[in-house]
Image (cartoon, rainbow over all chains, first blue to last red; front, side, top):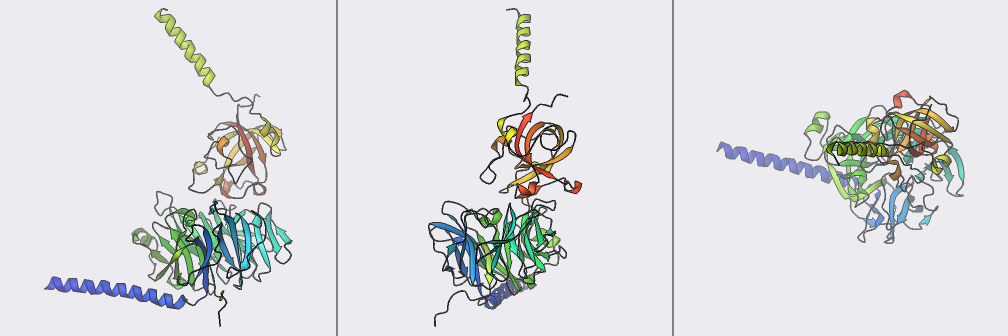
Length: 343
Length: 160
């Protein structure tokens, strides 16, 4: 009799936990569903890479480029959400996780994908990133940092790049650039550069990448390689955040067995989207990785089933809901309504 | 042929065979090393930092190596100076290192081994010639200039 009561208790307890998790997912879905749009690159049904948009809960997926003869990737919304930059490469070419910002041609379109036009030729305007007002872009090449006026196409300012070499992003307040740099003793350091003086500091000196800004321009989110974390000494890449001066670094999300890349904070600073995949680089060679979304107030969080060593490493890890979104690569979020509402 | 004669012949064969197989590279000069870059030196590879020669899954990178200059053929460097040289994807032999990202590099040198002598065509500073990850185990030594290896040929130690 006692055993039956014990089993019944366990069943009810597990059921309650599952119910609570479901409730958490439903609540998060309701919170973000109408919270703008996420753009991302993904394989279409025809096998090419296109730019897609979906609601932040993963619903209402729309193909913005519909171009089976070419591949498109690396979308970037202007800060007002009105326009989109992305790269277009040949159909038989793959996006490379180290070079995607300089592959193919830079394309400018309205944020619903209409009125697309090339801004330059193959390889030109590499690692282009929007200025806060959307009138200029910053580019990063061997020549250095170039600020290009979008209306005229002319370079209006140049700076030395000081070791920055990829994933270059202008901060929302316009005062800084973020990127990956080779100047700080590790092959891939996430770093910040003063947009006026060029002075740079490391944000993280682990092997790390995909840095991006919080909306306040004072903090950054980035992927951090934790070599201690298994994978035959190679480690799994975790999602971290820190002040942009490198202080107060802390875990956002980690999972044994998956590399967490492409972290992007929602424009209101409350949520983060990322990709997680067993393959490196978000797996742009194949089909991208599952995108996921969580509340930043639930960080730090440990995902997956094999959690024991990570929980020892991060004893203050919390539990919270994580929404599973479609497969994608390099997602970006705008709060703006990017499609014309039919009256 | 008597047994002793046979043994002597075999010994002579192995001596001659061994001599013909020992590595003689000459001065390492060729048209590429003489033409590329603004600096051309022969230098001794002082050591091979362990992390600089690891093949990294999916990632191309440059590894920084320490050399002592033995002979200056072109450029403003001095014999005896210690310099830091970045080799692209240093786990590969130099004759296989060019790829679609970095085209005009190479040489006849194979695996990088401490004590080897290399005749190299170089450029500097690195930032003007290479964009990418760098594995630099000499970061704490604060090298003021890191040179970029364009062409790396095996060479014998220059005669004094």
